[in-house]
Image 1: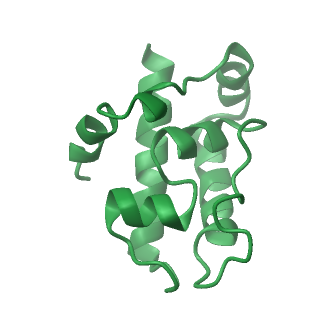
Image 2: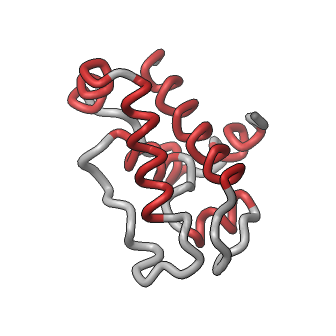
Length: 116
């Protein structure tokens, strides 16, 4: 995976403002990273992968699951951010490779958070 995105994300004060809370860390420990990864795949597939998203820009909650926090921190929360930060075009269905990449970015951020 290309980790250059993480050095770019550090330049954004907004993206840097996100971090896992204690309850998020406990949830990850309780469920395990494999389950969290499956949740990430589910969220990305249902909320970001379709070509047309009626509520684009509002489909990712600000709290309630560690993956949601990671999505905002990594700019994988909506198609607008995916285009701005990753140059993934809007109005086209995400490919399996794109979904895999997005999930890997989210999981990497979560793993970094667990180490801090």
